[in-house]
Amino acid sequence: MSSSRAIGVAALRGLLREPKGPPLTAPPLDTLSWPELLVLRGWLDTSAQHVSADTRHAALATLTAALTYPVTCAHVWARAGLRGPAGAIGVIGARAEASLPAPLWREAAELTGASLRLEMSGPAAKGKAAPLEERGRGRVAIVQPAPPRLFHETELGRALLRGEAPPPTARSLPDLFVLFNPGLGEPGWERAWGPTVAALHRSGRPVALTALSPADAQRDSSFWEAATGARLDYQTNRWASLAAEPDGSCCNSLLALVDGGARDGGKAAPTNPS
Image: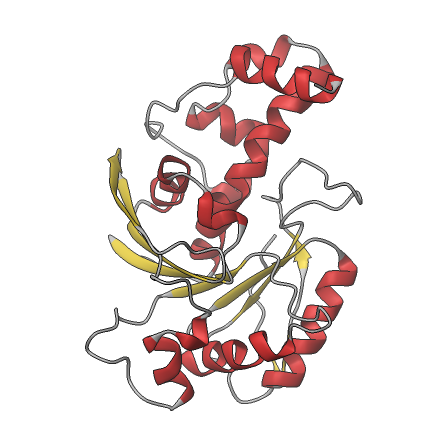
């Protein structure tokens, strides 16, 4: 076991804990840092303030590598101006996030105060439905198609491409779509992403996209603009993972939010995601 991995295991044993539910009072996400949020939500023991820098960093990296997905969803939910006791988020092109346990996804519900339905599509969406996880203010249901499908291959995606309303057998249109580090501009992925981006563009819903690095963001932005006529305005994501990838990049480090009403070309009306 590498020394960094050993530190991570020690950090998990001594500093991380099962959250006890939402705090009685919670400031807005935009006013918090990762350490503040993790302590406030009960994921990180306050004793982490007094341990070595290496151990503290390992604990933060371990937690944020998983929680970056639900917390980014909650952040975007608020920035898109979504409200209400319940809603749905379409997670498109799901890969690593498709295997994230429901208790971790529950953070998105806790931080939005809404009961959320997460509808995942993509090559790693294994075709399962997780039971409703209930705790505190929110609950979350995770649904994945069987067999795994790309979004434009689902009933909803096909209806959007045809310009039709969602079919009766499909769930209603999600309130928000999220693409985590999708790699739209990666060579050879055009045939898979092209019709999916077209369907998302026709949905009229807000779409959030993250990127690992400025280079990834530029490729994805070029692809999106060519497909939709709308430009992506990437900014730093305050809820990016703190665990660095081998090339030094970080998961979800950049974030763009496309206003669902910007469907007629030009620059998508940006909502500052930072």
